[in-house]
Length: 157
Image 1 (cartoon, rainbow, N blue to C red):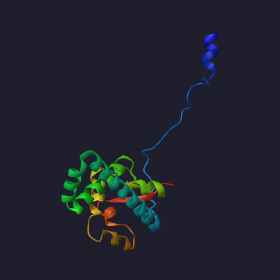
Image 2: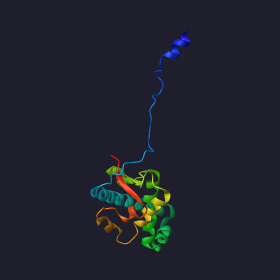
Image 3: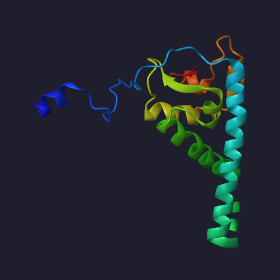
């Protein structure tokens, strides 16, 4: 008799049932130009901080010899490597960089879902096209690093 009563009463310690949907495509409401500009500024600060940390680690771990070897590598190569290390992991794992987190935006594919690995690398390497920053002056304000890999930066809050 006691078992029958226990089954009819809800367990107060049972976790509530809820439906969590994170894979739902984001609405394609493009981020405004000012948000994109703030993304750029915050991401440049993040890039410089990452560069500083990598430089300090190389100096501490490898000493003066490692710093001299690093100085032999052309700055453009070092910059490309560090910029790739900054953008690719963040956009692959989270769909957003530090700048996008601050402005409430996210990278999505054309369907509003998570971008593919190829799209994330395409976004990153498109940033190295000369004068790419000026591509935001077009009518739709969609830079080449968005239009070439077919991605969008959309508002998520």
